Image (cartoon, rainbow over all chains, first blue to last red):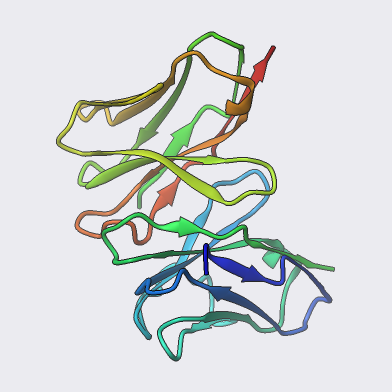
Length: 113
Length: 113
């Protein structure tokens, strides 16, 4: 695609529910990143994929968060047992390689009520 | 861990120069970045500077890096109302390129006519 696409753009869920957020990177980009941006804060790194594997998942806050990229393209961020504190904009970015410019999607705004 | 700090708000008049400041803590950072975020839009990379440089100029943008003081600044010449946005400073860990960026909280730039 022309840019990084994230779906849905908005998601409202009840506390305790499971959610999946999808990221379609730019075609051919091998590196994919997830960040979380809380209100009034800068983006916070969550996880980085190189191809199908998670090269760095040190930013995932706890074991309720998990991400996959099974075919080295689309990635899904999965959050179990959502909490109100998970409410944020989840940003995805991709780059041709890990040392080239990362292009960000518009994000998924997650609201946990 | 790394920490990146920025002033939260800057207001200027159209045509003036804007200077947005940032301090960072990781002296081994390889690259330092400036991103722009407009309402409802994704993060846009404006410019970056390699850690062995003191200055980089790109059209209306000038980046100054004082590595001794760990201080980074972004100067926007002839600021326009379209420059109104949130500007984020970010650093990357050594040898990691764009992966696992650490962002500041952002500086909101308001340009009045």
